[in-house]
Length: 307
Image 1 (cartoon, rainbow, N blue to C red):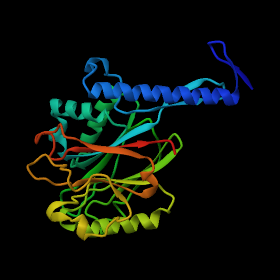
Image 2 (image 1 turned 45 degrees about the vertical axis):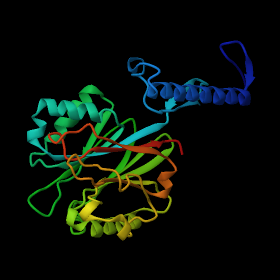
Image 3 (image 1 turned 90 degrees about the vertical axis):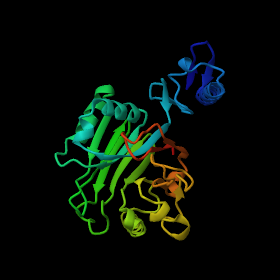
Image 4 (image 1 turned 30 degrees about the horizontal axis):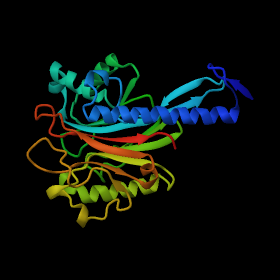
């Protein structure tokens, strides 16, 4: 096949693809330079508002030889919203704050939804979709061995939801709040997110049960990301004294404080198996949170969705 570009050069298909690869590399190099300039205060923030930190693009060719610019990276986050129910959902300023922050991410798992009416999370989801219709939401069953029942919520956009597994009914005896597992696909990357909020006094047992559950339900080729308020630090848990998920990558390390209070504890974690680690880029905290908004910071990780 011979392809003629707009500027008059005639290239065969191999030369065309090589040209595109060079073009893609130059674009990404320029983006990196722009990011460096911004971080060094060389350029003004107002001129940078449409650039997302370190996002790369991939140039694809469709069946009609048209160029497609594809953002390869995905931001996944978890946020324990601390007793998120009717009171918080009825606070307009607070809801606006939650919406503003969540819109910065592609997938967000929301924890500690406590609402017997089961309408508060839907209110949050509706307000997010008013800002961006690409978002969708799902929510787990209510779970808990006491009168205090919780749900997990998942807010996501621009990914293909393949399936989700809610272990509330089948595994209530093994967890205070059994995990929710969601299978997504983006580009050619298929992955699972596993969100769980462990009981503080029972972290070791619940993480051991989670590891066993995953070993039974998944094979060695699956790409798995565990995220949530695991209470996996300080007086509840010591990574140095435990053998849970020893071959997995703990992205949020012990020296990171994920709590709003004066404590210095890495309760909230990302634990990533070796298959998914190949796609992992970086992680961090969103610590623009005060005690009225939550007692936890939002945690996030960035992944490359091209396998």
